[in-house]
Image (cartoon, rainbow, N blue to C red; front, side, top):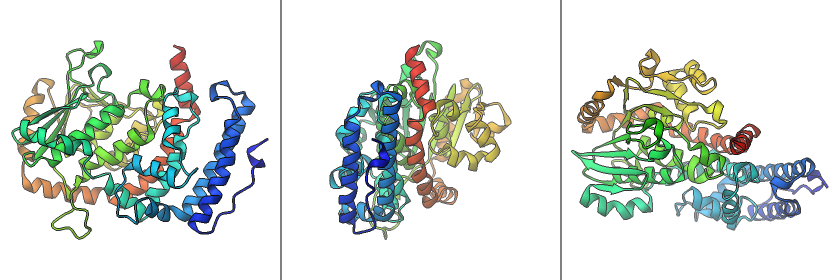
Length: 438
């Protein structure tokens, strides 16, 4: 049997008729997959059959969503009356349209496996989110939904408002002098990001934006316990590659939530009034400062591109080693081209160029380069500078001019698909195998 032996579903009818045809053919593909051994035990021929089945299913899902994306989204959100975040939306789709996306159980089973042992069902989620974000009705609605404060932040707000501090595990939040100080303390992993840290970051940023006494936000890495950097502050080592290789980095809960959740909130703020005619504005945003100690690698360098004021220690460096890691560096391709120019962006992203804070090109990425001993003073000076209501209004207009919501949406529609494919690229999986062999 080959994947081409399956009959091709006829689409182009009503939503429900096409959904039934989709479910039937995806069911045939799943039945054929169920007859194969687990991926790690398959022969070359068996894996080729599995690849063909997945390809057939994904082409069918894509055709279905090209026609019905808006209708699917309206069905899932009660004609735009309900706000479903990424995770809620994709699993609601699994229930309402069987076969369109993996079920929550299927994804949970995959997350227990090493990256090179998975079927790659997150690619099917990438197909879904590309279609949702491409759509001119569904996309903006979904992006706004991701700007709502999280339930965890709303639960913690009374505690933070009263005490001025919250311990979120890999991140500490403290309010002083009208500023929210976010200190990343994933100390043994050099502040590398994983699913837990993403959740803590979004919670902390929500709290800083919700709290009436906070006027400025400041992000800085804490002191490390890692042997190579013990006692030194580190900004970020980017994505936690160990967790990526072991299959614990999620497309939805990490790679998409990170970009459309906490980083989007740094740029655009929180959605505080759902009405399109809200006055004076629908979003609440505040100025943000980043303090870069030691290095900002990968996701850390991506973060530099969205802050209003970036201070770097003179002995620090920045890099986006996307080619070495094998994945797409979030919005790095989108934002670095604009801030550093296309040539520098290609050198950094495609060739792995490392930029030291003392190099002239570093001034395209940061505002100040100071002696490491003067970092604390520089942060406080920047806090005083940005604690100004005119700064809030002007940073809002600068961000609007710099990054239109539609351009952002269109980029991340393609990112959803490309990143899901990269997670299962043969070069990435080969790194996993070599890592585990060592």
